[in-house]
Length: 97
Image (cartoon, rainbow, N blue to C red; front, side, top):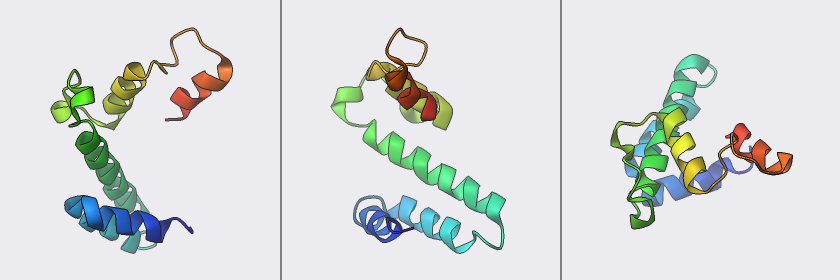
């Protein structure tokens, strides 16, 4: 995947713990795909929680939320919740996440 080097560099620069976990996921893909998915999920959760520390998201308490609930909170904040009335194209953005 062409974007992997860019992703790795961004993680190394800004998210040290996530970088280590991503490397574990990447190196384990063929040996233990299920474990790699778990690591990747952990990386995504860490990054979302780090982003949500920004003061613009102060109303979202991310500390005890898992990925699904984090995504729902973010979608609600950006008014992209698929349960709201909006064009189908916009709903698909929220549903895809």
